[in-house]
Image (cartoon, rainbow, N blue to C red; front, side, top):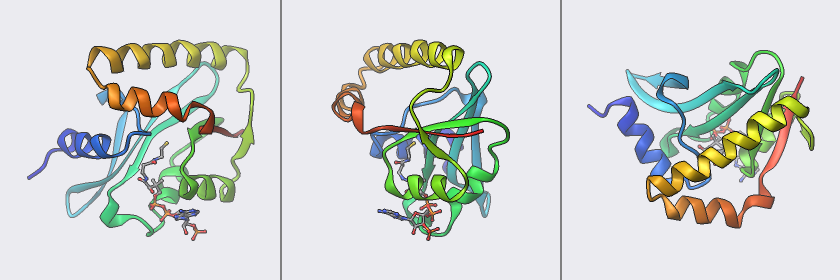
Length: 144
Ligand SMILES: CC(C)(COP(=O)(O)OP(=O)(O)OC[C@H]1O[C@@H](n2cnc3c(N)ncnc32)[C@H](O)[C@@H]1OP(=O)(O)O)[C@@H](O)C(=O)NCCC(=O)NCCS
């Protein structure tokens, strides 16, 4: 049977908007003991960031994005350009925002630089190019 990490690698390979995350921050949703969705919640200095949100294509359109958003407790931010996710974010109280606060901004800026270094080191040029090209399409959403 396909392991969690293996399943996630398959989703990451297909969805170039996703970024990889640390294994210890990975959370999965299972059906019949198989992973069908993944997300990660990481502290960013006073605010949490939800990243690496993906639902297996076979299970999309069943409301799993809401199940994921329910797991976000306290101030949370999300960067995305995915219209389905934007729809669920707006329906669950997230608002489009520009500024997460000085400390989260600084923490996230270093995290972004590290992400680019990681993509280059792992020779993930396809993702790096895709995300650079769409840099200004990603919007930030915050729920306080
Ligand atoms: C984003 C994603 C996680 C959504 O998961 P999902 O479980 O299929 O979403 P849901 O079934 O909960 O649907 C969410 C809402 O979006 C709507 N929706 C679906 N496709 C849409 C589209 N193209 N445009 C606008 N809304 C859309 C649905 O109708 C639903 O709205 P409703 O509750 O008002 O009916 C999934 O599409 C995915 O894995 N995408 C690829 C990875 C990705 O881009 N992740 C985001 C990067 S941060």
